[in-house]
Length: 216
Image 1 (cartoon, helix red, strand yellow):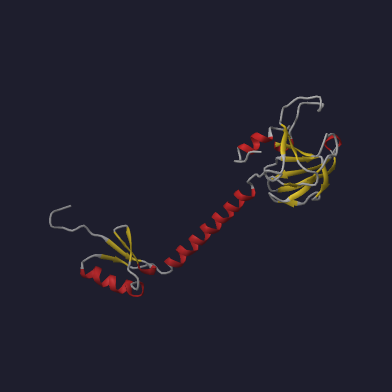
Image 2 (cartoon, helix red, strand yellow):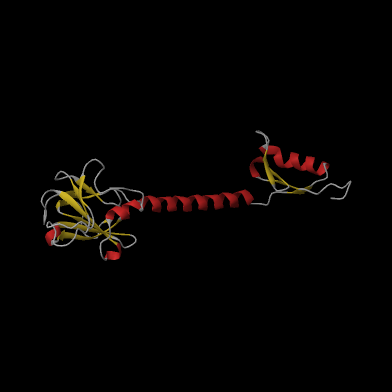
């Protein structure tokens, strides 16, 4: 900067008494907002500063943008909450009796899910939001409900004593969809839970839960 010359600064007076000086926002003192534009403009001109008046409709446009951003954030938060996995039986209400991949004479093949032993009639909760794609008898699985999640993953809830939903019904995470029982091939009341991405082969439910921040 040349000696004796002062750098030009742009002073903008915005709605609500917000003043911008050289790109820095400064909030006026309480009570200043009503007369901020006229008073500050006079002071700025007296000091030889260039004044940029507020553009017509600027505050309204900024508020509209903020409203759209807030609405978008709320929708995103709702999607995150709806896709969060939770346990199919309330913690403390079950005992884990068999894990994925275990092999025993109890099963014709190695175990394809998790067994959560609980008192008969205990409510079974949907682990996440989705659509009921199947409800009915499934041989060794007994009374089975299949819920297809938004990403195509199928969750199988087996050996139920009673169903709590109907086919094609939309469910949300935490909603009661059935009740623990001992139907099908079982030695006692429990929920057999399977996780099948894309409706294909089963994967370890414990791993599926853990990557979503939950642990059976």
